[in-house]
Length: 296
Image (cartoon, rainbow, N blue to C red):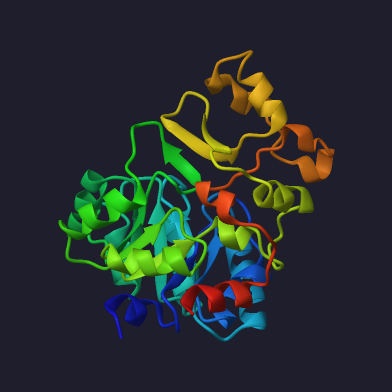
């Protein structure tokens, strides 16, 4: 058994990638029940009671291990960690911020932490700060990204593997058995999967969002800057967005996107987050099937 699997306590080294503010206990439980490591996305929550409620909801659906992603710029992170530890969660992932101050807290609670990094220098710094493992999220990955130049999975994963001694989890461009097996050849002990699970039967994403992923073409995603921050989000470039990008600077697009189209019905301007791997996803499948096919 690999060091990563010992840390996670699940059957397969497949971690569910957190999707912004998306929290579906059903989806988390489905990943864990299928042998992966389900992950709550609690980074943008501001209430510890909400975190406790989500944990309880997952526990009602599975007795298998699961964790949560901690966004380090959230001022409630330490309180959330205490709630997770009290609930028996053994391993969390951390992202978007310096891990320097949080890892002593994680270890004092008897937990393990896996820090998400986008570049080699971040990986080296995270290990020095106490990270027990790393999610190496390469340029292909969805979610929050840097506006700096980034390396692909084929480059970044082996590069980080050459410089650190902790387990590595590859993220970005993984949706089937080919990507899963390639990750191990590159030096990873596991994978983190976001977009493929987003386009699953159990995903709480709208049918419009899932349809956008299934219909995503090669080069169909792009990085959209988020305001004045040095951050961007990889999104599907919809017809409306493609036209608007010819009319205004990319950094202004984020202000015109509809972040809650399920309420407003304005799917034309929806922010459909997805990684580049969307181009390889052609149908919606149950999570159990996705994982079984991935490890076959």
